[in-house]
Length: 122
Image (cartoon, rainbow, N blue to C red; front, side):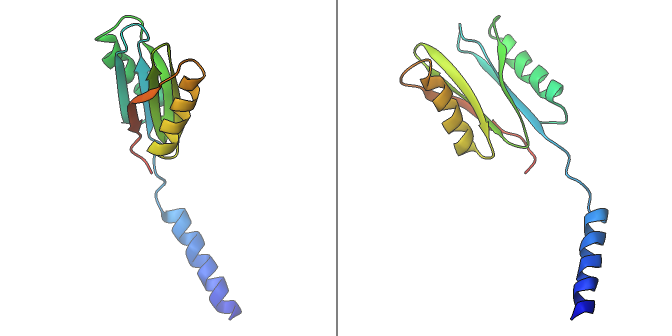
């Protein structure tokens, strides 16, 4: 029995060493509080690339865009109310949306999710 456990341990270590690591995947959401325009990105290799893409999309429709949230191997969401907004992230869409609504509700009533996106990696 001891030999089987030792063999399984060696196989597990060999698999872990030879298995390729999954690359990180970044995403971002940019938002304009004045116009309510947004931009988003997912599946980028770096945070800077994800933020740049989200800002480029948002800035094509508004001048006061800012990065509302960035995330890595996760999901992000943006919630907007009549007098404020909020963003959040989580391991899945539902968690990201709940976080964004919670932050938005600190600044406004009647917040709803206007954008969500998940990065490409699990």
